Length: 126
Image (cartoon, rainbow, N blue to C red; front, side, top):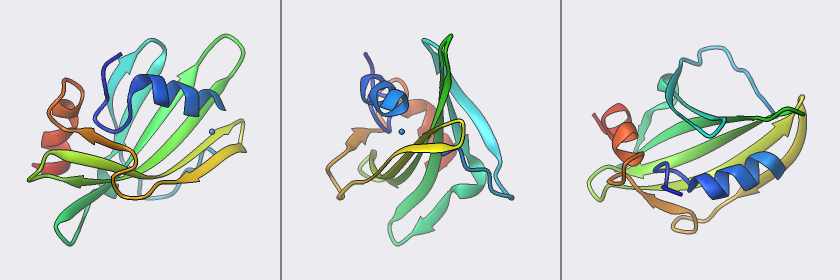
C-alpha cells in the first residue's frame, strides 16, 4: 500500500483498528483522501509554524460493518526536506480510548513526495 505522507495505510489501519474521537472548537476539517473505507482529513486550523517545521493534525476514520474507529495524528512537516514525522497518535472507538502513543522525531517519518504526500504538501506547506 502507498504512504499517506503521514503513515502508511497499513500502519493507519492497524492503529485505527487497535486506537478518542475528540472534537474541539475551532477545528476545520478538510477531507484529503478516501481509500478502502478509510477517510483521511486534515484540520486546516491546526497548521502552525513551530521553528522550521509546520505542525498539523490528521484525522483518520475507519468504518467497517461492525464499528467506526477514529484516529488523530499530530505531525510535524519539514517542508524543505519534504518529510513529515508523526509525533502523537490517539485512537478511539465510540469515545473509548483504545490507544495513545508518542513517537520520537524520525521514528514514524514519511515523505511528502509520494502520491498521498503530494496531496498534503500544498495544504500544509503552501
